[in-house]
Amino acid sequence: MTVKELLDSVDKIELLDVLYELYPDQKENDLGYKQAILEMLDLTPNEEKTTCRVVIDHVYQEYDYPGAEADDYITIYGIDPQAEEDEFGRSGEDITWAIEYRPWTEWLAMDYECATDDKRAKTPIQHMAHILFEMTWVGYTQKEVSDQFDEIVESKNDLDKLLEEKGHDQAVADGDLIPMDDLIERMKDVLNED
Image 1 (spheres, rainbow, N blue to C red):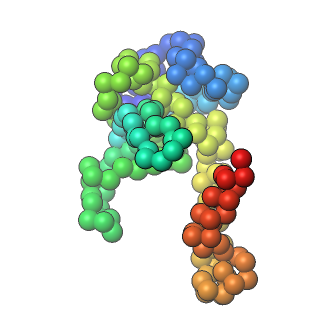
Image 2: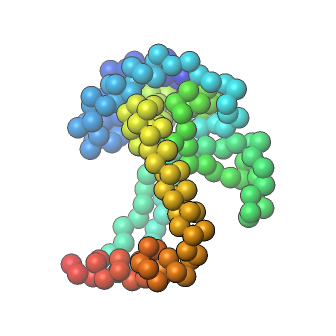
């Protein structure tokens, strides 16, 4: 079943109720979710653009440091069986993709699967609620999502230009870049101020 078929099959009012049950803090974005659903219902899935499928999964991760709480949540990612080998020697089913910046016309064309038996992802309407949450992670319209993606690409291009013009060491010396070790130390200092 595609995401579009799933969306068409669920009651939209109940979908919002389930979304807010799963993500209570999202109720304040009710108008955004209604706008997103209306836009999605008018879109035609672009089946030529993707071989990716949406996967609903469960994450539970404990951390081994004082005061740390375990992560326990439902996640959404993409898997593209036709993905070429990456720099780590993974390909196809072995690579998971962050797909929140993909156009909604691609999302709607994707098949979906649920890879967990977690009680928060048992029913089709729960599946759609989790997918809707992920699709709107960066915006409640396709334009907002596209604008966010364009901003990331522009920042990457600016960084490439900076590195080409100055080189890494000079950019750090000029304060244009912060080495990761320095950033981690700054973060530790901020966290320890409490």
